[in-house]
Image (tube, rainbow, N blue to C red):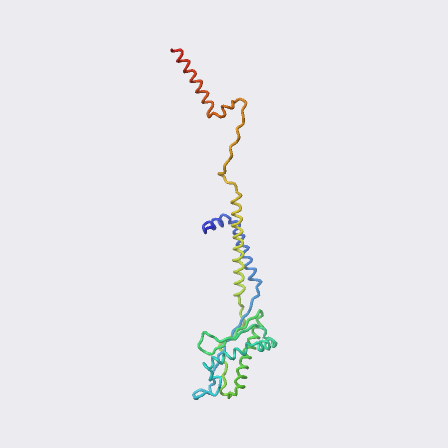
Length: 251
């Protein structure tokens, strides 16, 4: 079926198309409404070198001797904050929200992004606070365990933090669109099927009408039924007989 034929079918069955659109829209809105919404918060933390090492030939902090210095330190701390043991311990303290800690690849700086999401905004705020504190605690503990002088410790500065959890509507919108589009395809397929079935069974105005059988008339000879225009033939025979009689009299 071509695009033109499909459009013609939809126009011809407009009384089925409008209810189909209404049903698809209601299903999309219903799925969007019942899909659980999540809340999300973010924080961006910047790792800073100690001010005491400025102007010194060799820094006393071993973490600053890593390749790319602070950037690798950020990656190491991110791994420690997101391991299973830490996630379980923070959950026991009330930080049950799902979170992830990763380096910010959009900037050329040792920036860590903490992202937390949950269905409850208060859980998001509590989890973000716990993860932020855990990251700072692990960074200090690692430097202390490495024997780095406190004056050479790397510090953490908060660049940005969400003032409050914001709702994430991406998933409900996607599910609503998928549901609406899928149901609309199914309903339109039903419209095309109904139209095709109706066009097959509908009688055509130019249908052939079979000829009625000949019925014998008691007043008409059966041979006359087989002769076209029998009355004309009889009149022609009578005229010929009269012409012959006149010719005989003249002679």
